[in-house]
Length: 239
Image 1 (tube, helix red, strand yellow):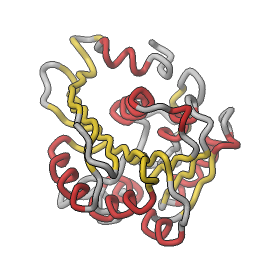
Image 2: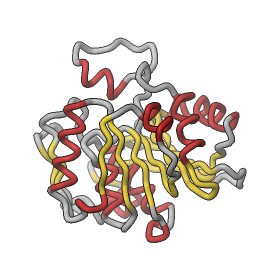
Image 3: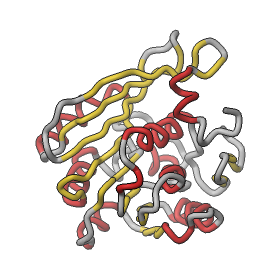
């Protein structure tokens, strides 16, 4: 998925200005969130670190909610804004060129859904690409900072959705629980039956509840799995 654009059934994501491109796990995450919650009931959504605007666009396809998209990297702001304006849901979006920490300090509004595919690598070697480092490395947003922002910006019945590396999911849940966010659904993801788990998708709420757990494998052999195909069918042209 390294083309300058990625075309979905209902929208197109241009990605020529951003270091982070559309990727399969982010697409799966967006589709999983839509499938997991009651989208028509949402009045407002916050997308933390929107990048190209992919997740916001996926959510807008199934919701009439107003969507605030926060992004710190200037080129990604321009890219997401262009993608939003080119979509049929452009009136639903408002992009904010700032960090989520600054946004949370100034923001009095609370959200029914907060979604984030955050920068999640710590202590790994960084590349020479500054844009990619901002998108990928948590020096610009730690998990603790993310949890603090989410708990302050969620309504009492709101849901927080996070995509993380599988090996950081327990760390995230521990950090979030200390701040009053509890896991209500967790799905771990592997690329194929031959691979180990590499991503975790988590839904959280302020009130402690029974947590559901399941797994998804993206490919079985050379084909997409049944579960993956069902989730992505509303989006992928090939499905």
